[in-house]
Length: 325
Image (cartoon, one colour):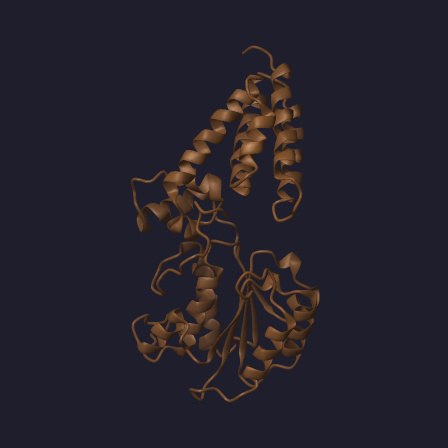
């Protein structure tokens, strides 16, 4: 995400109510109560929906010194230490600084730490997030730890992209997943948790279903970017936009956010044209294919303006296929 979107999600407080995660919280509470938690969990929740928060919530549930039957209290020293990263028996594995990967030496250090006696005399917990950033060697090293867990240690892997993890790692974890919530439900939650005056539906149409990220984003800038992008696309559909100049400007920053705006607009136009008979939708379907290809280039050195230019030319060309209403 760009500067106008959250670079790092700030975790909600432990007593936050995230309705879409309640089924997983209930299942985890029952597993703790009946001592069926196991030694490895894979929380498979799309980014920005609270998968990492759920991992810390569970850790706090295990470390909380005055825990009620179903959830951590959120107020005791142990709970505060969990969210502050100061609980010595709670370990965290993530990409270091500017690295985009979790490396094998990090996994080896984690395994060595898990083998030691816990500071509090109880269980140790390790949160690996995002787990899809494990490189091949790191994943293989972690597999050994999953196959031979240390005592009562619990590993919690969090990922929104499980397809990037080896099947061997996934198969040794208890998988926890939820259906993807719809944006109206998330927008309602954001209105309750944040500023009711913000157009959260528009914010989510740019960010996608990432409500926790949305709370830390520059919502005004996101809404302005969406408005500017949609206006330009309407011009392109009239054949009144310069694709080369626009693509050059859009390709410099906020590339992924622009693509999200374009996708929402394309889907709406395809539905509208198909329902009203105002034009053949095939060119817009082709533009959607171009967009999905352009999205694959987000984290590559491929020229972003070139990908956007092709997409805008496709939309520009669609103007000639329209019939008068």
